[in-house]
Image (cartoon, rainbow, N blue to C red):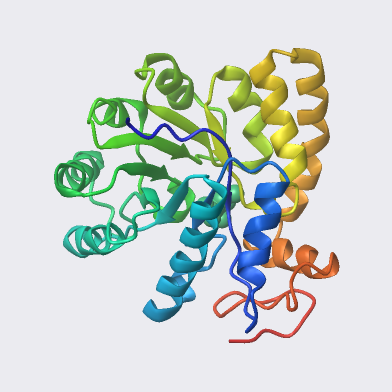
Length: 281
Ligand SMILES: O=C(O)C1=N[C@H](C(=O)O)C[C@H](O)C1
């Protein structure tokens, strides 16, 4: 059956310690209601990990997901189409990986037609399904509804993480016109509640590393149609979500998890700077 990502999917931070913190953290977020986990997202500082560390992260997450029977999504994407395909082929060796979160090619600014061609090339060949990751403030490349709607029927593209900084016309058009099997995942932490109200299938949220129960409750309330309670819970999550994202992600999230004694160090790697603590590598 085709993978349909849904619910609150947590892009795990990468603790920079020597013990089993990643595994413990993954178990905790699942205990707290995460419907699955995302390894090697932005929140996981994937771009600052070396290849050995990246494969260690995938192995730990795969083992937890196998044990807990929850889906595993892994970040795999770049502005190099061919090397992205190689990455996807490598990931396929890990049986637990349900899909790759594949970012719009950044920095190059190839045009929307170029982005569509990039994803078609990958989707035609990838041994694992793709979730598109549309995050123009990071990539420098817009991808509007017309371009995305050219990709939604591809059998190997199962959804999109939409993180465009607003509840905008493109997102409304996309939600209205997408086929049912194509999953829309909110990627802006403070905008999750409106997106769920509009019919999004779930969310990939860095802040859910800390606020897992709260976002899982929000998702359940919208799903169950408890509109007023969902609105209340959503309203109460806006400021905490903004606060956790105020510094470059995942600086504040790690700091908060450290304060909660869930990780041994809040350190992030350069070029990120820890706000309250010394950094480490
Ligand atoms: O790691 C992720 O996936 C996320 N990254 C976003 C970002 O830092 O831009 C934030 C989102 O909550 C999840």
